[in-house]
Image (cartoon, rainbow over all chains, first blue to last red; front, side):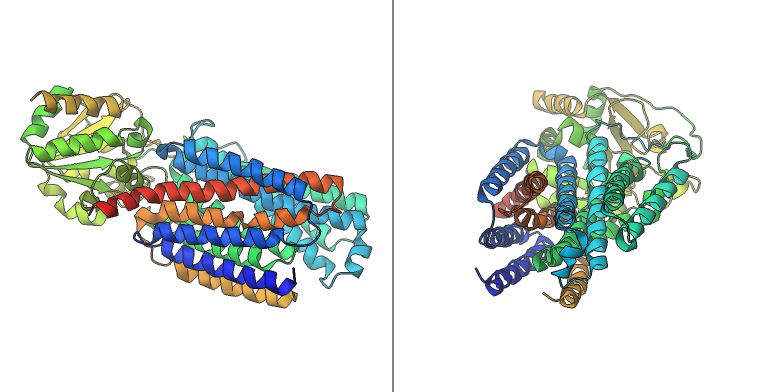
Amino acid sequence: MSGSVINLSYIIASILFVIGIKMLGSAKTARKGNMLSSIGMLLAIVVTLLDAGLDYTWIIIGLVVGSLIGAIAARVVKMTSMPEMVALFNGFGGLASLLVGWAEYEKIRTAGFLEFFKQSDTPATFTSAVIVLAVVIGGITFTGSVQAWGKLSGKLGSKAVIIPAQRIINGAIVLGLVLCSLIFIFGDTDPTVQFNLFLGVVALSLMLGVLGVLPIGGGDMPVVISLLNSFSGLAAAAAGFVILNNVLIVAGCLVGCSGLILTIIMCKAMNRSLTNVLFSGFGSSTQKAGAEVKGEMKAASVEDAYYVLEAAQSVVIIPGYGMAVAQAQHVVKELGDMLEENGCEVKYAIHPVAGRMPGHMNVLLAEADVPYEQLVEMDNINPLMPTVDVAIVIGANDVVNPAASEDENSPIYGMPIINAHHAKTVYALKRGQGAGFSGLINQLYFMEKTRMLYGDAKATVSSLVGQFKED
Amino acid sequence: MELIQLLFIFVLAAFLGYELIKKVPSQLHTPLMSGSNAISGITIVGAILVLKTNASEINVIIGVAALILATINVVGGYLVTDRMLAMFKGKEGRK
C-alpha cells in the first residue's frame, strides 16, 4: 500500500479525533463523539496493518489478548471504581509509548549507530532526543498512574506520604535523569556505555513517577490522573517523532494539550494552583490542621432523622465519595423519590470536585436515574441554602467544610464549598468519626444544627427509606 | 516525511487541543478525560510497526508487550467511556 494512501487515511483519522474531542465537550453529542473517535482509531489501526513486511502472527496475538483484557476490564468494573480504571489504562498507554521508543533504540543498536544514521535523513541527535522523551514521559506516566490507581483503590493507602529529604531525593533523581539523557543524546560514547545510560534513563523515569505521586493525597488524584493523561498523550507524540509517524504526533499532541487544559480547569475548581497540588504535600500529617474546633459531634438515630425529614419542605442532598464507596446511589434516589411523594422539594447539590473525579457524582446519580433537573451545581445552590430545611451530607467532607471560607489557617482555605452549614438542619452520613480524605477536621460536624448518622451510607439510607415505606 | 513538517503539525495540533477544551461543563470532565485517554492509545500504531518480519527477537518481545498494553488502553478506554456516557444518554431519552 502506498505511503500517500496511508497518510491520507491518517489525516481522516486525525479529523475524527478532533471532531470526537469537540463533541465530547457537550452532553448531547458526547456519546457520538466517543464513537467517532473510536472509528478514527480503528481506521488508523487497519491502515497500519496494511503496511508492508509486518509479522501478523504476533500482531494478531497482541491485538486479541489486549482486546480481551481491555473489554473484560471495562465491562466488569463498577461505576464507582471508574476513576482508578482510567488511571490504570492510562498507565498502560504510557508504558506502551516507552516500549515503542525502546524498540526503535534496539533497532539502532543492532544496526550500529553510525550505520543506521547513514541511511536516515533524520539527525542522530534528534532521534536520540525523542527516544529519551518517549521513555521519560512514558515511564513517569506508567508508574505515576499505577501509584494513582493504588491510592484510589485503597491498595496503597490514600494518604499523602512525605519521606524525609524528599525534595533532595527527587532533585537528585531529576538531575541524574537530565545528565544521563544529555550524555545519551550528545555524548560520543561507545555502545555499551550508551546502552547503560539508556537503562539508567528508564530506571530513573520509573522512580520519578512513583516518588512524584507519593506525596500527593488521594483527594488530589483527579488532578494527577488528568495531568498523567496529558503526559501519556505527549509520550505518544514523542514516540511519533521517534518513528516519524504523523498520526501519533497529531493525536498525542491533541491529548497532551487538551489534558493539560482540563487539569488547569480542575485546579481552578479547587481554587489551587497546579504547583500547589503537586508539591505541597497537601493532607499529609506534617501539615497544620487548622484551628481547633469547639463542641462535639452529636450522633442521631435513623428514627430521629426520619421525623425531621418527614416534616421538611425542602431537602438538599450533598453526595460525596462516601456515597460512591457505599454504592448508595440507588437507595439515595429512592429516598429522594419518597421525599418528593411526601410533598418535599428535593435537590442534589453537586460540587465540581466531589468524589475522586470531576463529574464523578453526576455519573453515579445518572446511573441511578436521578432526573437531570434535580442536579444543581454549586454556584446555583449556595444562594438557596439558607432557605433549605434539611441538608443531607452523604459521605462528603472537604467539599462542605466551612473552614474553607472562614478559617484562614486551614489548608483548604479559599476552596469554594457547598454551604451546607447555611441550611437549617444538617444530617451528615459518615462511616466513623475519623477525618476526611484530606485529613482535616470538619467544623460542620461540630455545629449545633448538625446531627451525625454513623454507619454505612447505603444501610443508613435504606433504613430511612424503610421508615418512609412503613408510614 | 520532512522533520520540519512534523514539528509544524505538532505545534498546530497543540493549539487545536487548547481551543477544543476551553469550555466544557464539569459533569463531562470524567468522560472527556477517559475518552481522550483512549485516544492517547494511538501509540498502538507505533507498537504494530515494531512487529516487522525482520524484527530482532528482543524487539518482538518489546513489540508484543507494547501492543498488548496499547490495545488494553484503546479498547478498555473507549468501552469505559461509552458506558459512562450511556447513562447520560438514557436520561436525555426520557425527557
